[in-house]
Length: 393
Image (cartoon, rainbow, N blue to C red; front, side, top):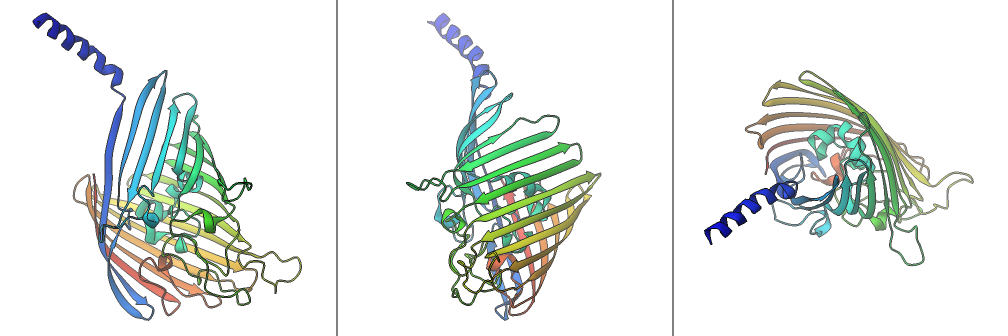
């Protein structure tokens, strides 16, 4: 009996390495803080808010070694509000991510499920909000560089890296009987990394964004088709893109940018262009040959500097302009972002951030992150300040 037990123990010891690459990891982020807004509908406002520098979340990700350099992978990620305990992303249980796939060292990675598009994967890293969160987004996250929405029913392929170069492509099926293209989306992206340099570019197209992204990003404006509103004055659900008169048609986004790190400093620049077709439901007052569309373009420059291993300071500026072909309105937004972050440990930090936004053109008013902070300002200016605590596990 003793020999049998010894043999079993020895056999088990040699069997363990075959499963050394199999793992399931529980992880998460809890971000909570106090936000002050100088003008919310004409009044000051103090609000406890969750998930600004990073969305509060928990998730599971895992891998199984299938041999021959191939692994099965999965990730499910839940977003929540730490102040109320409510689910994020419109109440979805795994609204942040939910996918399964195969990864091979030589041939790349194929995943299926609810996933991020190429703008998020390849351009977000070049933005200040990609480093420090939602309130530093281009106005109202119009280009989705802050991943205000995810894409359902998506099949994504990412190549291995070739001398720092990596490409990806994604297609999302609409699932509407008899209408193959309805609610569909596609994106492509390219990135390059070499030492301190990172470059990224991506394209994204969604055919029916107002019905495709149901987690709180697109809703219909309360105006009428005969009185189109200026961009960014329409309603939204407090996160992501915007509503217009009626239901917007397709959304098309292109973005590119880069970062460069030298010593304790990092500099970043980026540019995005977004267009919504049929934004005013084919407004009848458009002259012949004029396209019913709304355009936005944003240009950003930012930098951050580590004063000490525990202390980082950051500053950024974004300029955004838009055009509504139906109304002729051309709004503009200037936004200055600043942050000071202090790491208490590898997993816990405290931060102080500030945002100033100025709007001009038409009836545009300042509205940092489209009301997610506290609502639209009654003037062309708005100031936001926040102190927060973040813990990762």
